Length: 145
Image (cartoon, rainbow, N blue to C red; front, side, top):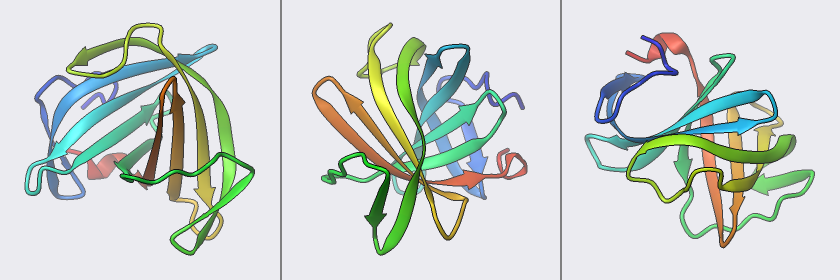
């Protein structure tokens, strides 16, 4: 399975949980790109994002509703400390499905890694009029079917 070419409404099994792809957004920054799939978990209808990088590093994120975290060098969340791992400006290159982004729309992003567990992440995206905070964990490619 090519994780960079998943299709609309395709069903995935991630760590033995069933998800359906609702949309895809391909982001570009300088010479690199990554793809973000919006997923609906089939057993409880919760929304997740599967982030697949060119290097095939895969992170499954869950949006943290009603949470504002201002980007800085390190942040504390749920009694865990996270350090800034990378930041930049992402630009929407293409997408499919129902999404609230437009072509060439840009956002600032901040990626944090848990100081005690390098498989745990926090992502902050600053869009024009919206701040989106997500918590994620690294997924092994073998755990996606």
